[in-house]
Image (cartoon, rainbow, N blue to C red; front, top):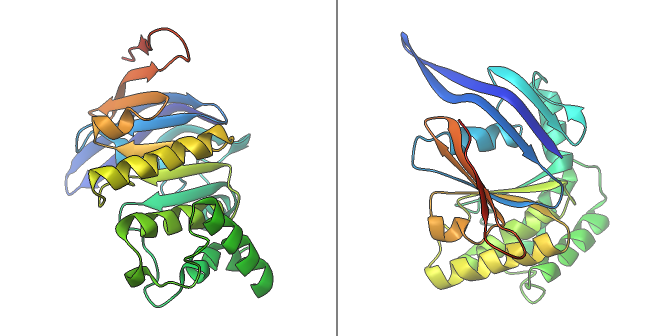
Length: 236
């Protein structure tokens, strides 16, 4: 589903150049449940932004679901994001004056759905994350875990090819974080492709594949097997 070849990302900091990603090669198959992990400054957020078409590489090739997306213009990237990628963020980014169902329906406005169709799809997505009794609650009437479930429903409502979750448990207590990761595991078992960006090894351990970055390079790519020990492949 995803093919990255020779991905580099360089930022200019005054007269200096900062290499955030260095010759990254990565393949992700449809239906994977992967964690991008590493310390602050390792490049994981930069890689997530490129995977999510929120940013473009300085050089290299990115193929998403058969389409070459590196080098696309911003309006073209926006269309890819809207149709193929669902985002879940640490801070939820819910509209405070809108109900849960209206928050979830928002992405469908840009897809041309009628108001009735948007609300129906949003209600179905909220039911999938266990919030069918909270359709008309506003964010301040929900717990942190419930707000993150609303955000997950919003990511699902457009039926994207992939879900990208950026530190999705960062603002949650440990018990609620476990519940959210269990929900992600359920979604993955139903065929959803998930990539979770986290600095927390405990959260990363919930994923079937762990990709660790250091100084802009993949230094570990470990996949858990359904039987037998995990297999580790080091990248240099």
